[in-house]
Amino acid sequence: MSNVTRKGDQDILRVLNDDAFAAIEATGASLAKVVEGKSLADGTTDIVGNDEGAGAGPVKEVLIILGGGNA
Image 1 (cartoon, helix red, strand yellow):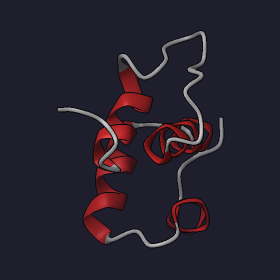
Image 2 (image 1 turned 135 degrees about the vertical axis):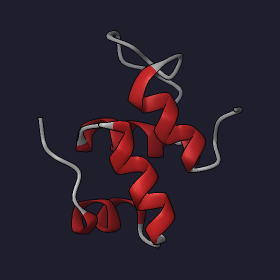
Image 3 (image 1 turned 90 degrees about the vertical axis):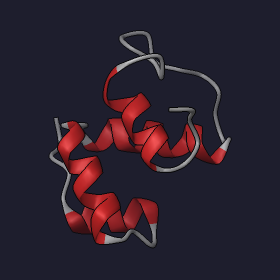
Image 4 (image 1 turned 60 degrees about the vertical axis):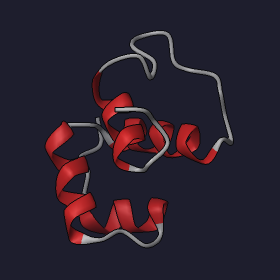
């Protein structure tokens, strides 16, 4: 599992403010889960992984932080 880093998130998410980064980091999401959440938030995918999907866990939290999910 790749750890979330400021540079990694910045490369994936482009503009990311300090509060959003801290919130994503606090989810415990791996870099792969951040990528999945970003794809869902952007609407570039609607296929959710088999292990947890966007229904719960880090992917859903990242999706909400990025403004693509409902709280």
